[in-house]
Image (tube, rainbow, N blue to C red; front, side):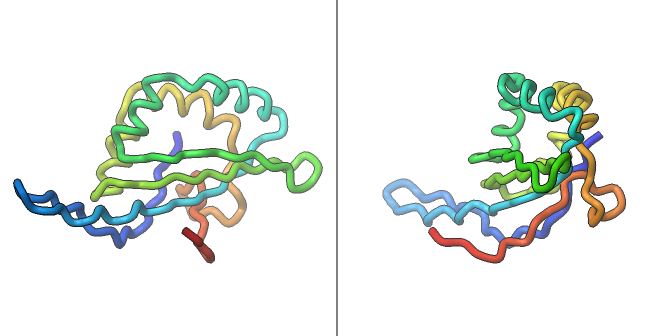
Length: 140
């Protein structure tokens, strides 16, 4: 089963404005990037699943404050496929939201389909599925 990775967030909660007052600007979303291997014999299956993701899974992703989520596929060497994932988190408790996602029955069923396609990269920490990537540049 896919394990959510842990990263410390440095975001501030959004402050709601009072009637007649301006609200404080929302903190920018936290950006996450991650990588995992994709088994060569499962590339077609993985693409097929993601061509029509299950509505309940998409709803859970949104409910857990994830937006602008994308997964990209690359074959870096012959037969060596990798997935790069990116998303923005707009909530204020990443660990709690990831725990809620991991407990969702529809998401668990989805991961039973997708997990056999994936393989953690050699540098993954023990128990880590997708490996977090360090942001080294951002231009808005």
